[in-house]
Image (cartoon, rainbow, N blue to C red; front, side, top):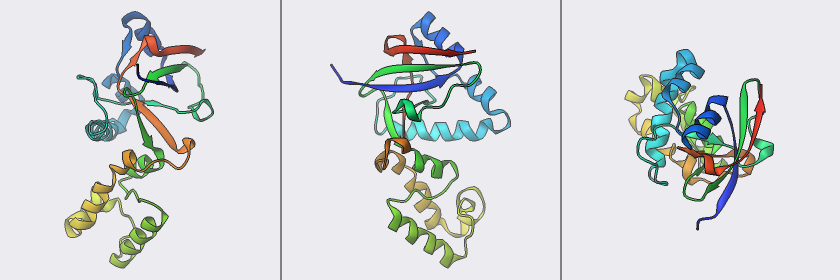
Length: 191
């Protein structure tokens, strides 16, 4: 039997209700739409990229489109807010993927994900040489047409969120694409 890891997630109460009734939860597009409003398309695109890339490192169950974010330590979890539940889970190895959250923050902003500080310094020097003040324009704007190699360098670096280990657990997160009732060890309600 695969070893399990304790992970935490903050969710809407409906997630716990669905787990109780069906035994399984998968992210619903309408939850993403409700949470993100006018920037929904941005997050759907990010999550589609994340899921597509994660499939290189983890077998994702068919029909699972969007990740469920999990904290590696109770001290790092999203804190409870009104109308949420905190789920403490024991998830078997092979059912979750750990990612580098610093790298994810860079990916979310369309920035280069460096290998280390030296690589980051070299990248910033390269941008300066080309007179590029806002590197996200290489991906989101027309600058990428003029500097296609720089654009490819940036987009190619994004996969490092899965391959460059986080320096601390605080800078790490886990994702799963489904939750199972059998994994739940504790439920904390916040009304």
